[in-house]
Length: 259
Ligand SMILES: [Zn+2]
Image (cartoon, rainbow, N blue to C red; front, side, top):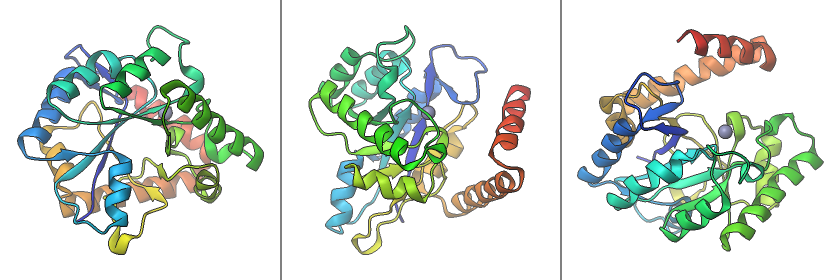
């Protein structure tokens, strides 16, 4: 069966047509209510790793994650999660802390942590990890862990890849500098058959246009839906391989603007 990991970015209080990566607060609340009312347990990545190690059956569980430090994680998401008694994980870019009014501060992280939310790493500077050489990658991942641990006073053991970019070297370096798991942006359920812990964890993007019907399919891991999403992502990756990273990125930016 496996477990889905959701990936959110910014949440916006306006109930309007928003950027693709921005979900309205109304929809976010509706999605979280869905989880609560349908008996899903929202767990942390560490809970998941422990369960996988003990081969406990994993049913009706889900991991909710956020990338990119947006202030809405503190001002909108944390209160909704707390009201509904749900848990979530926030992947934070350590060098972005205390740098802009619309981004999280160190104080926000400490408050969120105290409220039972998990703080993990989204790298130190948000550079694409597959562009870095071995020394730069080491530095990027280790610095982020250290900075976040200093801030919240507890362990940081999970990483999400900026821009979803990763390669073999990222998957090998992360455990070497103390990470237990790496979250990607590849859609798919996560499986831990026989206690095997996956090196790269899949995540489903929740976007501005994700309907509640689609959300329900993701939460339950509906087989046909998941298969379609996985195939679509593979086709996209293949196109990227043919076009090259830079050209693909340029086309994607244009496509996003036209949406
Ligand atoms: Zn990011």
